Length: 249
Image (cartoon, rainbow, N blue to C red; front, side, top):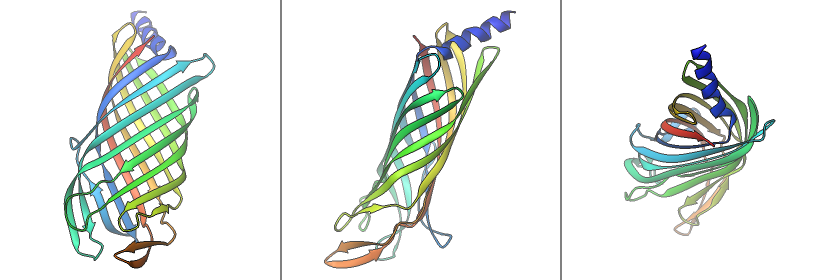
């Protein structure tokens, strides 16, 4: 009976309005490919980028309204080439990423609308330049949690479809490019433990994947010369480790 009461107490936290704050570290992995070969990539390790986030859920009994936002900043390695084809491998210190989404949950299912912005950043090396990727997106998924004794376990699987994805290149005439079809998915696993009657302390791991198809041709004007180019196909495979504090009110 004691174990059942403890589980019910934790479950009651999940049924009320909740606010969550968290901090995380992000491991970035981005690759551009042409004919199956990697032409450039961005990558780092856990501890190179850090971020903060929040989440709020309003329980309306039959549905739950939710909003979530996060921001991360840090360094990474760019391994690719300059515009004239010379190999370049440099450290970039001004990469940042933010993501915000809001939606409606019909437990365990949900649908959300989000916005993602990634400032790829640049180094001080000659020939390097900045790029920014951004898009709104629709997301739908399954968010399921359960309690074993005092331990709260939660899984989240989400499909993501970008709306009008674009890229701005800070080079030459600073063109804005419409990207190809962009889709992805997110998976998250979370563990939480109650630290009071209305609060939980926990950790989670998140894997966020995006696939961007190649763009159509565009014109880059550089040093009074026109270059016909495309943005290659790319893959983003980011991993997050976070610690959070959640309370019920």
